[in-house]
Image (cartoon, rainbow, N blue to C red; front, side, top):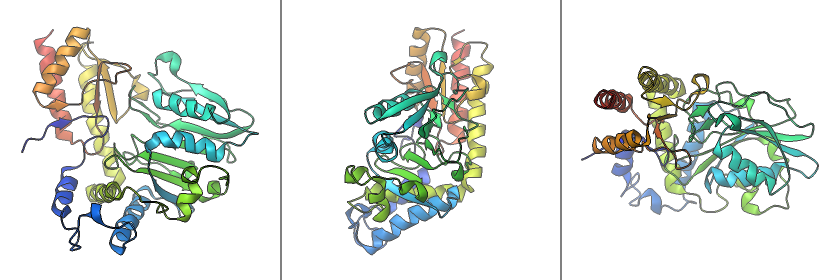
Length: 360
């Protein structure tokens, strides 16, 4: 069986152990005589899967009991609309910190719904840094940030603080479970699963119960967080297979030693690639400033488009997949989420050094 070095940005690599277990259970899940994809979402067998995923997530992230865990659909992009619909009243202003393309898209959706304010931005640097000099509007409904920026390869290492009456909301789609965080610093965290949590199809929302009370009743039912909270994310048919896979990934994270172990390994993987870039004497040029470098997405360029193209072609021939940069910025990008093993990063670092030696 052929397995490549998978550096895709998303859908991304899944742990091999998880794929094997899903394969073993695919035709007959726990003696039901059915695949988990065939189970009724109202059945006791699926209810256990659903609850297990929520319990494991709560344990791994140490989510306090005054938060709800929701499993929604529509990806993080649907949350761009759901958040202002639920928490942006007509007499307040939604605040956004711009650190890349996804925060821009979140802002754009909020602008369709109500008043917005850009509290900070790193656009003038080409999004090579994390925004500084946060300025909140006096009537702030909430502050929204994107914790990791997949396209530009930057990451928040110190989260902004807001007054207790201004909720801090974070899109953590690409770095959730990759490092320790204090959930209580946030009123709402959301994350599409397809990078660190599992396959595409489910979006995790972690929301403070106090914030849920603010949801108005006159917005579309499926976009109202209370709908999903009151029905334990079973108001309609949930993405059952994706939630099952999420539970397997969470099991795997726990087996590896939890988030602390993930953080340690992710740091080692990132340092391996950044050292290769820094020691290349300018052959590889990192996009992100050193103090803002992401441990999830390593972005870099080569001295010319021709060299970049040759690098990507030869890398693919050697079994490295997903190294092309986002279509917006080009260049190269290695996405090294939790499931990407250290050995893959070592192999990439070795290839980068070999390519440089042949193309000086």
